[in-house]
Structures are given as structure tokens and as C-alpha cells.
Length: 160
Image 1: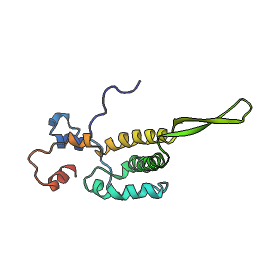
Image 2: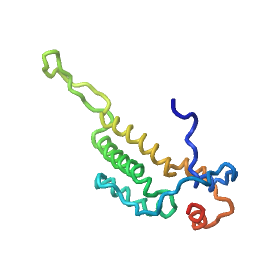
Image 3: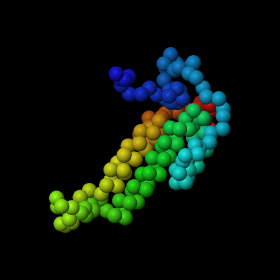
Image 4: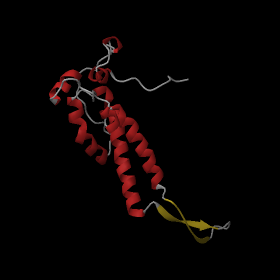
């Protein structure tokens, strides 16, 4: 049986939230400052997503060399979601499906759900799940509070 309850907040988020010092893991392993490069398996569309946010996430200390696969999975899910959404926009949510008799002869058509909606739903779920890990969803960002900070550079100092 897995662990119960919500996943623990990353230490950097605990610091930003102002959690009690005894609840912050000061012995958390830190990745070495290696170059963060996208994996070779990313598609061209996923690479566009990668380059759109990677520099900012790296600067804030959220994306490290240890996180490249999870971030790449998020980028891939965003690219697949965009593709599926485009197919649904082009074809519609309801499409005609052929109907065959027991001999395999076409007897007509019926209306049904576009199969691209399944791909869209699956990609949506992955985008939300992986995006939450990097604070990329509005609800995750809304929980952040940086006490007494008026400049974004102050937040970067806390995360580094």
C-alpha cells in the first residue's frame, strides 16, 4: 500500500510558504548544478513547450538536472493535448461512426463521441499532474505566499 494523504510540499515551497523551521527538511539532497538539457526523444512541438518555460524554471531553481524527465513528460503531454484539441476542433466532438452487419457489410452510420476526446482527456490529466509538480497550475501558484517581498528577485534568492 502506498503512502497516504497528499504528496509533501517541496522544501523550496515550504520556505516560500513560511512553514515552521522544524518542519523544513534542511538535510534534503540537492542536485549538482549541471546543465539542464531537453531529452533527445522530445518531439519538435514538445521542444517548443520546453523552451518556452525552461529558462524561467531553471532560474527559479524549480527545474534541475534531476527533474528533466518529469518536465519533459509535461512538455510532451502539452504537445499531445494541443494536437488532440486541434483534431477535436477540426472534426467536432461528435462524429459519424460506420455501422456494419454480421457479414461485415456497411449498413449505415451512427453518431458517437470523437476518439480524440479520449486522447485529450488523458493528456489533460497528465498536464495537470506534472504541471502541479512544477507549480505550473494556477491553484498551485495561488498557495504561494512570499512574506514581505515586493520584488520577484527576492523569491529567487529564497529558492537558490
